Image (tube, rainbow, N blue to C red):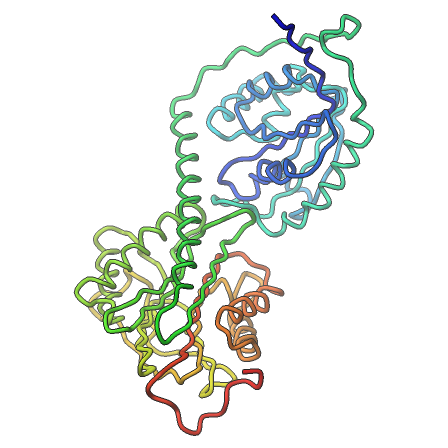
Length: 466
């Protein structure tokens, strides 16, 4: 039998910690995913250790790192958001109180493992080497949801620089643990704490939420491909930008549904809330819209379709509070009908609106908030070679940018942008978000009338680069 190769001591361990589903508080865990894609010297291990603290201690016992760098977001409320702090553990600091250690162990079992939990327990049991460095960042957003804020995204490069400084010079070849000349320090192993009731359920719930978010992300990508396949007489494009870094799906969406007789239904929607719950509700509501659009001709009437959604919200709660704009366009005539249920006014750019024109009519309350009054319906005739843009409010406003400012920015960007609707969507997104401190999801849909039986005589030609 071949003797097992001696396990070599880990030269440096870079460990990330985070709270899944808690935005910026999950920063360290998500940062590890990025760091693992970078090149590191031999002997450097980069891992997500956002798990029960006893498991962290087991991993430290297994690796025996000569150096440890701990990464995470911690709300100290001492510095402005996105402040990066680096410090070395001081061996003279007294260990935490036993009740703090026990609380940290118990909370880590419920899925709330973070940097402070690990520091408390490891300091108590002596699980960290003398050369231990903490790099932490002050969170800017700690609400429930996937991904971290753009404020913390700007901290990635500085943190990587600090990390490289710490790792540099720490990668010398170290002797094998089995070498008798190497002093092995045996740390006491903590007793396994009693599991709290519901801990497993909480962890499973996190897993389910994240799995659903991934499914919604794949559906959104498929939707873009479906729209790109084309509907006769129009060109279609759409963009969805969830708020947060490394997030694939949010509560805002766009869609285009072919209708009988050659018409097309185009919509954008903004489900109330953020994060995984909003993404899951969005998927259910999008399916409901598509179903109503092809049943009994409801899709041909914006008023009837939105009335169906109102009844659905009243009966089940699904979609209540959602802001939605739905347009039915007949490409053969350019005739369009629309309902705006609490959403942003669509924007028309083309020969009859070279500077851009918002459709301010037919505005009513979000889904589920209308009782008996019905929904007003607007009409317009889209000129040949004109473009209609539907969008959610994340494109034009934030806590730092009032909606009128963002709307004017959008109008100018659309009027000055390319005619191709796909390129126009990209141009509008870049122009509107370049100076927008985002704090919400974005959905944008564009439809360009490329063929119509009815023309607009005497209309000015669309932009000079047409």
